[in-house]
Length: 79
Image 1 (cartoon, helix red, strand yellow):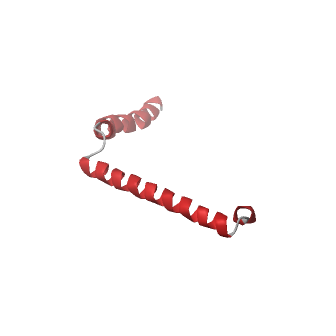
Image 2 (cartoon, rainbow, N blue to C red):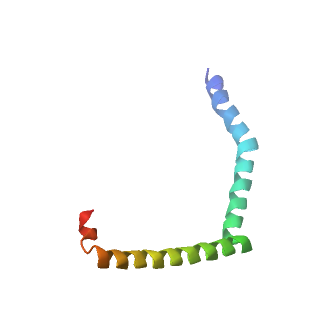
Image 3 (cartoon, rainbow, N blue to C red):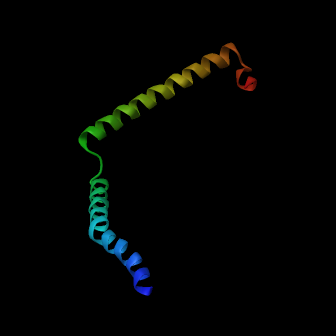
């Protein structure tokens, strides 16, 4: 009776330790290594492009808000 219970607990634990745990550790530390390396050259270029687009969008929004302020001064209170 007690041997059956121990077997039911021990068998999955051994299978986990032999197959799942090593793969899990390898994948975990591989992802940690990739994160610590920083951005690749392509990712840095994409980040610079996005920053430029965000800056341009910010300027456009400021321009549109200035136009709306001059043409419809109460537009901010309508929402």
